[in-house]
Length: 235
Ligand SMILES: [Fe+2]
Image (cartoon, rainbow, N blue to C red; front, side, top):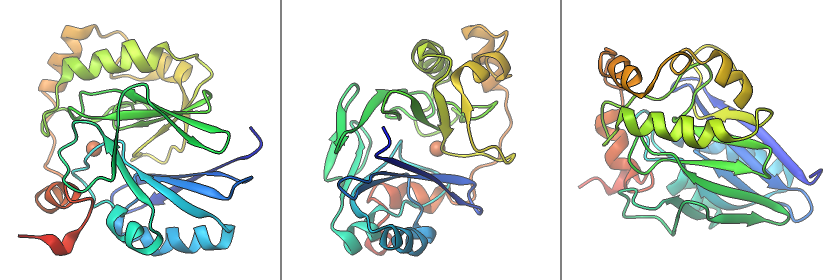
């Protein structure tokens, strides 16, 4: 597994993590959840590391930032991959539950984890680390009050899918608002206050009564992301 290059990249405005995953032996790379405003940073890093971007992969259609996929695709010719059933008109390819994406010897397995949105995927990298998107955050979880979100479905995705991975599995979320950069499944099972001591019913109760502001960018971000971040195509 020494061929794996793994980097967390952060967008401070939306508190989004973009993950760079690369196979050093073939110099091929994937960006997961790229952010439009950070495309120049990402292209510079790919250039400096001598990597060819093969894919941009989304965990879900985001409401809080515009994806960098359209611009990265223009610049590199990479393919845009989104979860099946995601409402996008622009994907080059859809990925479904259990499907394997290969990057040289590196394996990326899609895990359907709906609830935050109805088409959300987590990605298990080489079996030892999982990109949890907005399904499972460090000591938190994504909201379920729009984009066809459903609290009961999210509870099932986290407790029956993510929490059944080995305890030592590394956890890398799509956002963090408190400065954390990583966790493990075991740590979240013990300390994630959204889930510890809550059954499905009380989790739904709790999520239903959360009062959260609308993401600042939802009106522009969701329609743009349905076009893979193609802002110019507004019509
Ligand atoms: Fe989200």
